[in-house]
Image (tube, rainbow, N blue to C red; front, side, top):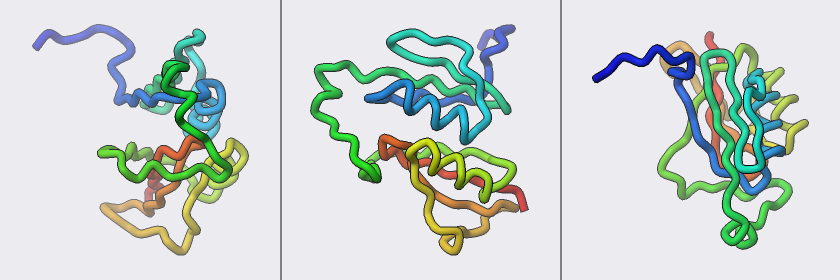
Length: 133
């Protein structure tokens, strides 16, 4: 396999969104990312060792995807991204401020040296957050 010299070789996630700007704001604020590229079809976010591409769902499909407040969890997804954050309490404020949801702190568990807590982004995609013990 050829070795890449690109700076974009970070761990990453592509998430499809009905509202690119709203979902990007969630990942920018919760993970401390920066918007590196912005177009009508997507935004490229990067920072703290992560790269997230928020990509627009085509309008002909998006119109059939209702987004509610609070968002309905998309529990039938086969994947759940997991991110290490410095502080789950500070994260909670960012999640709520950007339209997401985080389980109550008493539902957190410990695993492999981390406190782990699930939540979701403003469109209902389940996301796991971990804080080092």
